[in-house]
Amino acid sequence: MSERPTPSAVHAVAGGALDSQGKRPLVVVGDVVWDVLIRTNTELLRGGDTFGEVELAPGGSAANAAVWARRCGLPTAFVGKVGRDRFGALAEAGLAEEQVEACLVRTDAHLTGTVAVWIDHDGQRSMVSGKGADHMLLPQELPADLIASARHVHLSAWSFFDDPPRSAARRAGALAKAAGATLSLDPGSFQMIDAMGVDAFFAATADLGVDVVFPNYDEGRSLTGLEDPRAIADALAPRYEGAIVALKLDEDGALVRDRDGRVTEVPPESNRLVDATGAGDAFAGAFLSRWLRDPDPAAAARFAVRVSEWVIEQIGARAAVDERLREVLAEG
Image 1 (cartoon, rainbow, N blue to C red):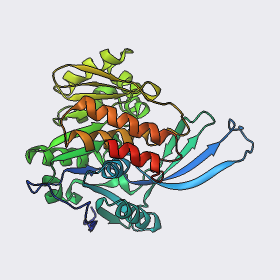
Image 2: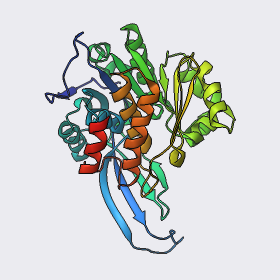
Image 3: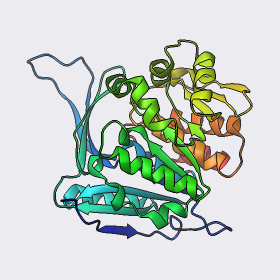
Image 4: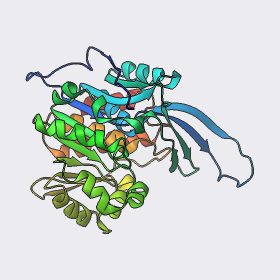
């Protein structure tokens, strides 16, 4: 028996704002979890012990993107599923604090999702993702009117690697396109793409009418079998029917291919990696915040690179805003 949806919205004044056409500028649908961050200054000792830092932080690729779009000034709504537990209440409170309009389906059947994130001594992260409530979102639980009110909908591929929640994500994309919205997709994880199979991944995502796709280099390489960033972008564009390809290149910045095939390389201004967790989500949120106000993908990518550079110098996906980030956001 499927659960009856019990959505609950947390409305912040800025987060719930509508534009001049009565549309929500951005609705993000997908995963919301809690990250258990584990950071060590040395390599882990197999079968042994070491000291490090362990902390809890809000996460989820889709929720992170929503928060960063809102931090960058774009009124944003988020749709996801949490357990009726302490972590679910904290996730709701965290989104409200970030002024993200939240529509969260609560369930007694599953706990709120958690992810163990190990950050090594070089700042690279490895994750173990538990299948919590975020993986159980069903099509009938979607707030169809909310999604249909969006000018743009963003999806994370973490909602496509299994079903549920794949059918819910596809339904959200269909509702968005039927209402005239644009759509974006973050491919999520090259390891999960490889496990799912490239053909199966394209079958689940390429017919949605995606307008912007946000792969990182490893995801682009998995999806195309190519090594050169320009070749990756050129190969992905026709698979997503002429979508803008914003290819995240880690320490090399980004490369963006627009709808007309023009390619812009965006070099980084700094590269002080502390923790890569959430940098790609911040890039997507920042890019959308700029592109949805000014449809120049190259300018959006330059802004997104600056935001994600700040993120990798912090611990966690949603570190507290400081004065330097405020300056970046003000310039964007």
